[in-house]
Image 1 (tube, rainbow, N blue to C red):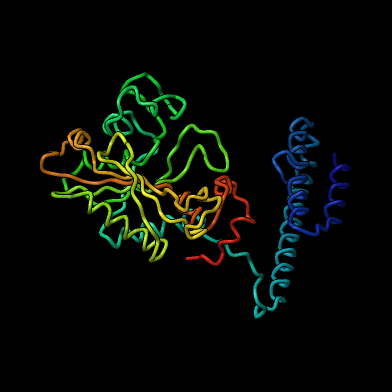
Image 2 (cartoon, rainbow, N blue to C red):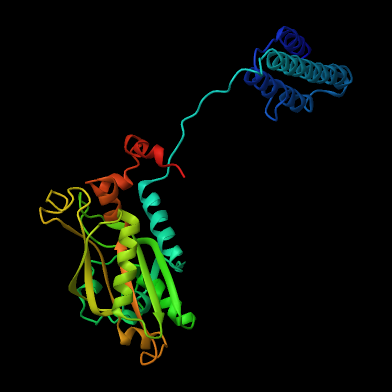
Length: 344
């Protein structure tokens, strides 16, 4: 064993690791829990008593030599790194790094929210996983409504009743929670992500983003709704943008309408974006159905209100002339770099 120890001592004295990784290899080899010294001490237990008197001293000296060599090498490496650092010219400019940018959907959402904030609307949020009551029943969806079918909704738990749990299909569920937990007047917008079981294509996706609005107070009229949305469009797309309302149907509003704006791409002369009609539909709206107010504990004879909802992707398409919805969620850096000038 003594010959073996002498051989190891010679190796230790000749060791000269060039970097921290090699120094760590040296430590593990000799001083580690499964290293050479640990192994020699295990062997030492089995030698005779006479040999222990001699080998014990030699083994302890070997351990001290290894530890001293390790500390010496570590100090040498550390001082070498400090010397390298001291030789650096700290007055030189730092390495450049690429600037990021906000996502176009975020840019549009921020602009929409800012416009409605100036009109006195506050921002409200709610959970993306909803129960049947807040997502459907309280909003006057009948039991047989096709939106309840598995083709349109991502159900998490489907029991054919009010115990159903699903990914929300619209942010109208936030309106229900607000009306249930407060008292009129309400004036709020609800931005957020929603989910629908649709085939992914250039014009549709299984998830997208909405901004919905709600205003409930005494003597709220359809004229208030039209003027609010007209002001919104003028702020978003510029003065001179034309607006038209078309009768429509939504379970939670009555009367209901869809709002079109003159195509911002072709100026109303006709293009692929507006299908050569000169108009693009951007949102649905209407007066809150009295049944919805009553479901939320609000006296529909005293209070009236309007609601509206728009897809942020549709607004962004018109604003930045983006023709494929899939670009928004592919995280293609080439696409996102086009919005660097829009950093806020």
